[in-house]
Length: 230
Length: 217
View 1: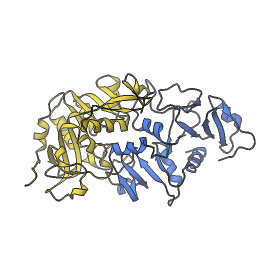
View 2: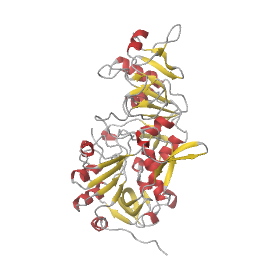
View 3: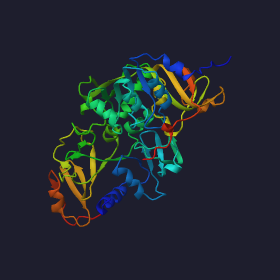
View 4: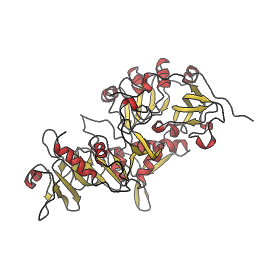
């Protein structure tokens, strides 16, 4: 037996994403953000996307390209303070923004990936993020229901992938990537390096291949991936 | 930075005890690390997925994949670990975070904290602040005592949307160290050259002042 080869051309993998799709994007700031896959969404002119990402990147980078090109109708995020375009589109109601506490966003995605419908938490229960969310009493304590999140597509960035889709992330580029890998119907990974099955040791794999549908090689990184000089 | 602010940050650093797991919030709290000795045994956590934060690095020495939650390029130490965002907040919510130091727009005398939103002016989202404030074992605030217009930030009740309720136990300002007690704000220490009357005048709530000498920092 041998494990299937999932390597795909970027254009072909992204072409299957319909307008109106919910799209999860890995990354926290620059590390782990799939900048080239995002550029391909823009190039193919996708519209009416629901984007789920920790942050809205900075102006001129990543999510910002989607916003400027008018690809996004809804953004589920934890923080967009470094992107003036995102703030403006939110304030102008060009996009709908749903804010979520960061670890709760992570858990909602993990729950979605684990076949669960939601989680119970007390985070933010007495803040405006808790307003209107259903309450449950368990063992005499009040809890709030946060719904699980799934997406049609997850776009991820890995440091290395094998052709079957086993993934490794680098340093703090891991962040939301392994969680989103579990929570989307189609998972597309851009990888800096693609190796033969077996080249990544089984103990060293962060995301197992069965979660991944398409592996796209990105032989050259653009300036967006580089160290940001502020 | 003013001398008083620098002493505030240095004073806050002295509240970090050996062996703690600590998250330092973006802004002033991050600067606390500059006042810890190089061999001080502490584990710094950053919510984007690293325990054992090493020294910050200039761009020419930085690893493009290694940042803290504020986007600063940092390094690792012997024993550092990387993990995903769910693991990172499991650490916070399960009580493994001994201390967080956060900035503030307002702190109330019952420990309520507002530091993420000014309706109509500033609404960037809460990031990881809500969980840090609600679940760290100890929550300290570092802030100037008043805002830029001179208005008090320590109040009877917060007027801005809350980050978390009844969470702050200690406040370090450029004028004083103040604890949140069941009876409200209690003055513990004074910045050099600052009087009790000045602190009271700059505080928007009752201030309990202990009898006898008040230590200076």
